[in-house]
Image 1 (cartoon, rainbow, N blue to C red):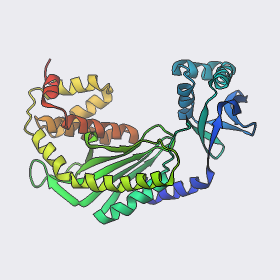
Image 2 (cartoon, rainbow, N blue to C red; image 1 turned 135 degrees about the vertical axis):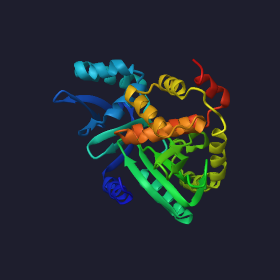
Image 3 (cartoon, rainbow, N blue to C red; image 1 turned 120 degrees about the horizontal axis):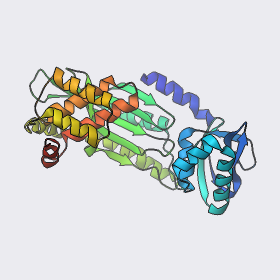
Image 4 (cartoon, one colour; image 1 turned 135 degrees about the horizontal axis):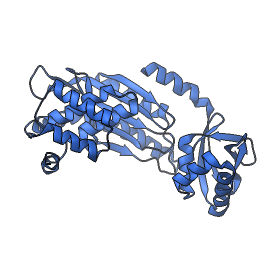
Length: 327
């Protein structure tokens, strides 16, 4: 998704958002054409998004597997269970709606940090760093933005292997993830990215609605961007050091990585193919094979998972990496 498309979609959603604190006694699950919906304060009923169903199960302490089985097989039993535990909980919840759907079922302490505010705040700071938006992603649960800055340029192995510094920004309006600003590197030679989670900054969506606190959040976003751009040299040094950690059996390391991080056989094949295309028998070579394989993923989410795994591997302590290099 391009930046302009993201802004247009967020502007379109803005008037459709409805938030309200609601006591559990004012919430009921009802069935409409055998589909569970939430009725709030005896008003019209609203559909429930799939991610929100998981939050309902969590907040009411209903085992998720059982919750989904009731939803699929006996929705009337699901409604009975949910309504029973809502009645007994006597709690305040914070409900977020988008149009006619309930998209989040949250604690009453939830701190609202909306995508559009985060985006405009970040763009204001990014202008000062000659940064460009490489790509955007928007789902029911999160917004991601990949950023790179042409002011941050260096190399790892040799001067023709250019590395460009950047950021990966994440926000969730539904409580599924915290606001995060993470360093991301873009390798020009093979167009792959690496997200280094070990240097993440984050703000959790909890608070009391105070405007001063809101201002602190947005100042923190700008400060995080400045700080992470300022650490570009430190990250490049980390990558250079990883080239000095040699690997005896790349295939064994890749197999152990696949098993330890529960990757699929197709992901394993893509990583092996990536390593074969550019065999580098060191820690950086393994990490780079993983991030190169990320380009083969069919979804944004899976691609990002491998970019983060590459960053995790490149920062792995030597003893842990050596353990992966053993039978």
